[in-house]
Image (cartoon, rainbow, N blue to C red; front, side, top):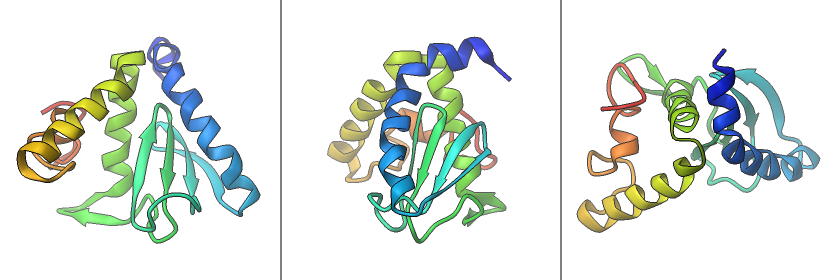
Length: 131
């Protein structure tokens, strides 16, 4: 366990905790896996979406951590890489992810693509935090 990284990324994790609390009242399930507290069946997420907010991963109702992404990679494998990014970038993680994501949309119309520097590594096979 990377305690210094988890402390450095704590602001991001607190955002994730705030997002998970209402989901519990709506039947979402919790588990510890993929370097995070996972919230499975979050009612506010896009059905097929997932997001890592620090060391909290929120999964929509139609996906699970073991949802395959191809080449033996799961959605949980992908999102785990974002938790490592958060531990490294700390409070800069969420603003940088937003910046790179919006820039990628402007460049090629996709958040999840090579133009998003914080998605390139997690989208690789095997997934890793950095490209």
